[in-house]
Length: 302
Image 1 (cartoon, rainbow, N blue to C red):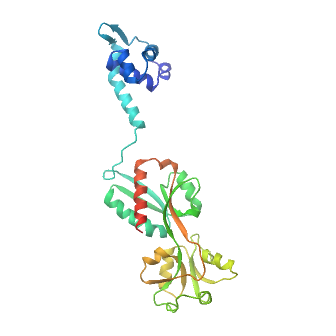
Image 2 (cartoon, rainbow, N blue to C red):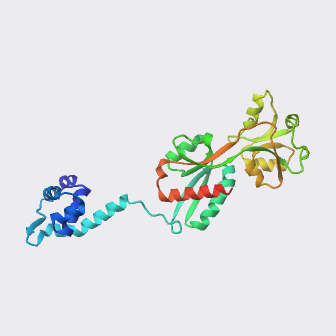
Image 3 (cartoon, helix red, strand yellow):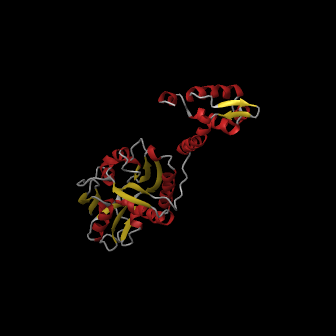
């Protein structure tokens, strides 16, 4: 059979040949394939032309394969099995799975979602490993397109619109300070007392001195003094422990820092929603679907 004959074949023809070899009857092959007898007879004619061989001769006992057809029987089974394996949804077993997962996450997301997720993963799927990359909002889309990220955990406002996304958790800002801060006993703080304090904030890109609180204050015609800007929330909380600075910090982070005190902000500041985002490339993969469910479960307990 030359290359021209191969181009004339498709899986339906090969399935028909397999049925004819098994059934040795056009009638029974038609029933198995759910086709009419004339359709199977027409398919047999195409097969004979493609293989340049009669393939079957009629006898009183049914169709008798030619030597060429008999030689095709075993390799044909293998080809059809391989083709079926290509389109069959793979089965994912977390206990035996081996692989790597790349997650893009801020230190906030690492503390609240990635840490419990990895602990959960070690118990359920010990063969899987996780690499965490820092969140750089401007690079998220490129990392997915280049196949360097499988999941990103980020606020809805930073999630590229073309990615799939699932809500993980909601959070809001509270005012955080060390437990023995001079203003610790002045709860709730008035707006005047709040503005009289020195503040710190997180600027992920470094060097920024404005955040959600400043936007809310500006709408009221007010401003505060920001004395320090740091690139991470965990670094910010260390700074609060070591100074008289105060900061607007996500409430869930303060809950896991018992040495810090939280009180209500005297200015209404919008909260945020964290989502897990992923590319269409992994959307239907059973292993990735399982891992996403584990992440969502871990975040639910945060």
